[in-house]
Each structure stands twice: as structure tokens, then as C-alpha cells.
Length: 149
Image: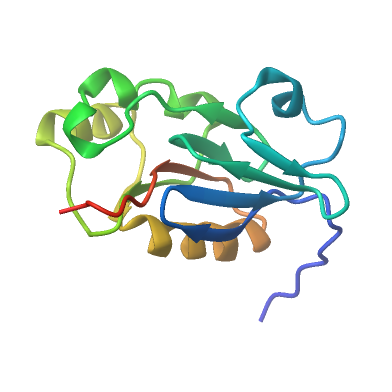
């Protein structure tokens, strides 16, 4: 059994719903607060609300991810994940489990990255568990949309 001290400084997925994900641990000095990536910010609770696809890592990095739905994914969207040397890349593909094309997944394999494809809700929950364990994990997620097929 491993116990993890929660300091309040960790970036975790606080909640998810149709067209938005709330991420906790975003302090007033977080670089993404000034970048315009965060759609809404709750200063009292250090929560950022995102309404576009994002990539977050356990170290607190948050980046825009340009594809907004699975049909926009191409292999170039999977480059650069190896920069932070993650143990695993979690791919949240929207409301339902859908797999990116093999060309996209091949880019991750070429970078020697382990990955898991999930619906976005499951990927968020898994990210929280792994991040709380102190694991190097990246979550690349598409938003959950009402009209997801």
C-alpha cells in the first residue's frame, strides 16, 4: 500500500461534463491562466474550466490540443508527448470509447510510449489515480460532446 500526501499543489481533474472539464490545482500564478487557455477560473477553489481539448500532465503542464473531435485527429497530434518522458499516455476520446487510427497510434509506438485509449470520463479518473501515486502520466482529452456517436 502506498500513501500519498496531497499538498493541494497537484493538477487533478476535478470534474467533467458535456463540453467541459474542470481541473483543480490551478493557482493564480499558473501560466495557463494568462494564456487564455482556461475558459473560466474559480480563484477561491483554484479551479480552471476548459471547454476545448487539452493535454495535461501530472507535473502541472497544461497545453492546448488542437483536435476538437476524433475525426480531426491525425498523426501529427501525437508528436511531442515523449518530451516529458511519461510512463503512460491516456487518450480520452470523448463520450464513448473510440480508437484513433492506427497511423496515430503508431506515432506513440515509435516514441516508445505506452498508451491507453478510453472514453474521456474514464481517462480523467485514471489520470487522477496515477497522478496521486506520483506517476509520470499525460492525459490528452477530447471534450465529451452531446452528439458524440
